[in-house]
Length: 91
Image (tube, rainbow, N blue to C red; front, side, top):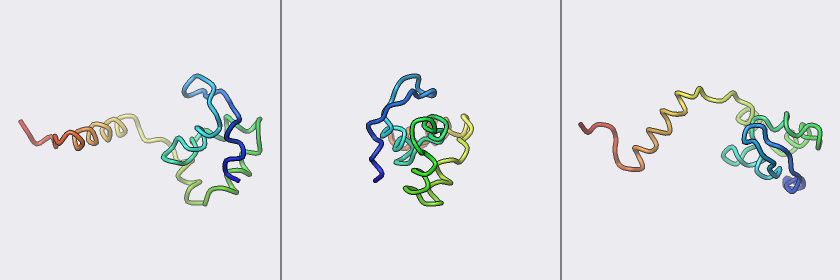
């Protein structure tokens, strides 16, 4: 059952406060945070949980390294421009 641990809490070193497992399990576009193993290994059988509840493809997506900051920022700017209708071609 994928939601069996959702009410457990743990400190999140990335955000700096306590969060429920549900957040950690779903924060990455519906997939777990890439640091979920580090944060939860003392509290529950997290490796087994991931293996039982996520496909190999999902696990690869979960644990892939983050994009460089400049790439992420460029994507955010491009998405914002698309949403506001400014394609960047105007002078």
